Image (cartoon, rainbow, N blue to C red; front, side, top):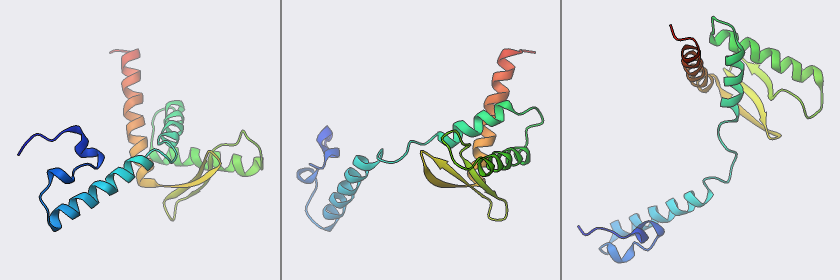
Length: 139
């Protein structure tokens, strides 16, 4: 098979493929991929919740547990509910342990995150925090 030029990924792949239903299917997938790549960065940038959770984890005293993180998030949600309105509100609106999700606001848009995602963030933040402590205090 000949080496394909860079224009293959731009949707000019038709001359390089044999005719038939497989060609039509491949060209359709290429068109979908092009549309996806054009709209891929149109939404919010990932990382807001990760930075927020990491900030909480770094301020926690050992032992760092997921339960303590949830308690801290519940405290932040209570602060938000008591404060009412304003620009300086904590982003977490509610923590629902029964449904295992939190509701938070990112750039004034309501979002929902599952506990499984929070656990992944928490685990990574805890690892990063322990590595940072070890580099500061090598034993």
